[in-house]
Length: 225
Image 1 (spheres, rainbow, N blue to C red):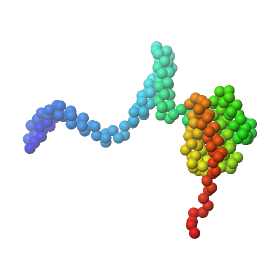
Image 2 (cartoon, rainbow, N blue to C red; image 1 turned 90 degrees about the vertical axis):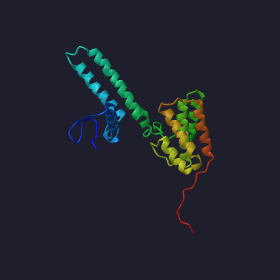
Image 3 (spheres, helix red, strand yellow; image 1 turned 180 degrees about the horizontal axis):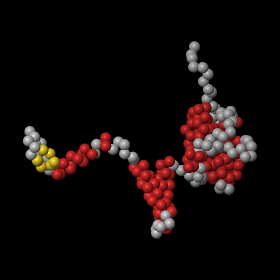
Image 4 (cartoon, rainbow, N blue to C red; image 1 turned 120 degrees about the horizontal axis):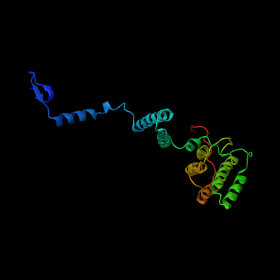
């Protein structure tokens, strides 16, 4: 039996008619299949490509001595740069986030200082309401105290996250609090969260609690008698 449809022929060569709506729907269904779209760029890539295209056009308009819309093209260029910056920030994050991994806890500008000295400085900053510096010094006091108790070995350039991870292995009951303290310090030290009295008190309380905690000795050997 021959199939009837627009643009088709019966077996005897006679032209036939196809319902237009049915043919259009069949074509749409076929084109919706993933095989036709698997190599297409994602929405972010398409947006970046569009911005790059518009950016190139705007640069050509500004640079062209015959272009009459230089000022308008310059405005468009600046707007495109702004949009591109927002897209990149949303995709890759603020530059400060990457700096956390490299930001040492101790600056070393004044040489090694004791935990007691850092605690005194933190208390002095807190008394003046300088909460950001109070948080910084209190976190340093906490880590220096762990070093003085040999829970941590002194190591220049250690970050708050590294100190928390290392100390958490020796003090597993406080591992979660140490990780939270490191995140709090990072959020404040790198300018993404305002410091306040509560943040300072949390670190000071944890510092005192750690001083009353005995580290878990490292396991020696793995066999049993």
